[in-house]
Image 1 (cartoon, one colour):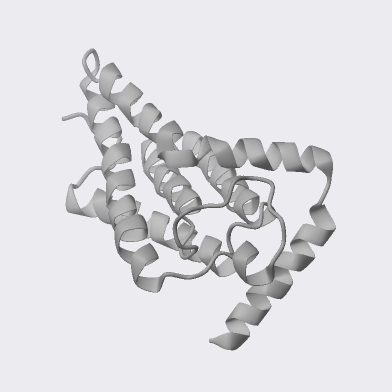
Image 2 (cartoon, one colour):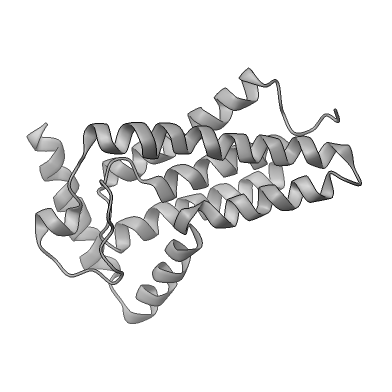
Length: 181
């Protein structure tokens, strides 16, 4: 386990050394802030539900997105983060970060996990939207690395959990986002 932590730390320091630039700082802070609390994705899900008053298919799409986010939050934030309780990289490696310190554990990345859960749900609704959302989700994960608040394995695990939880919601509720109710 120690070698994973060592590789994570070395990669993170290398990444920060390669990409560090004041303009990138601002871009990554902005991207990361879009994922705070999952509000971007929640707002989109609520918008879909509101659109469902007029067109029933949007209700199902909104439910798919919101259930995916909820299931992901339960597993990622309420189960795994407290269970694993991994220290944040800036605390372990002792470097300054560009955003306020984060109050919860590092593993897995909740921002990344929520973004990949949303992207997977959106991909089930429309492949073009989903592809764009996957690009954004990857940028979200990169921003968390760039800002030094997550290790690479936190981000990779977050991405995998997000995809898995959204697919599980699709199967359990038989929601694919494309059929009307």
